[in-house]
Length: 131
Image (cartoon, rainbow, N blue to C red; front, side):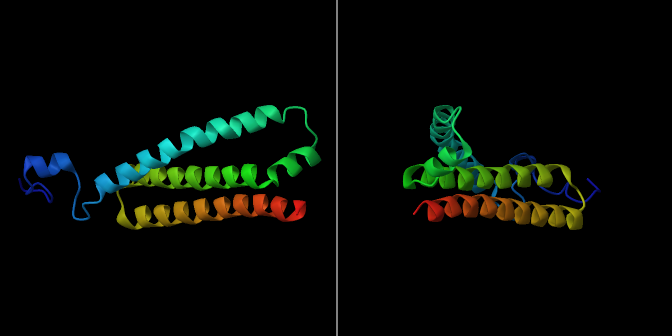
């Protein structure tokens, strides 16, 4: 038991929560975002199928309406939140160097916020243009 970290009990090692003890909350948030995505993806897919063969202007007009725009924005928020949570777990599990891990989590957070915000602004632009 001479190596660092082996002083914890077997139960503490199995739980794997560490000092932050935030594993369960993170797990629940990821499951909640997955559940939120289910109906949003189904409805958005139905929208996409209904727009098969439509022109760019028709699609833009459809997405500029309040209900489709709202559903699309909710889908973007849920999808990018889910992506951020899942990506963070992967980084925390497979990147061992703390500095690199922090840089990767920050980059992931920045990227998901930036691209998600760009998507939301694009939808809002359609809403404003259609008004």
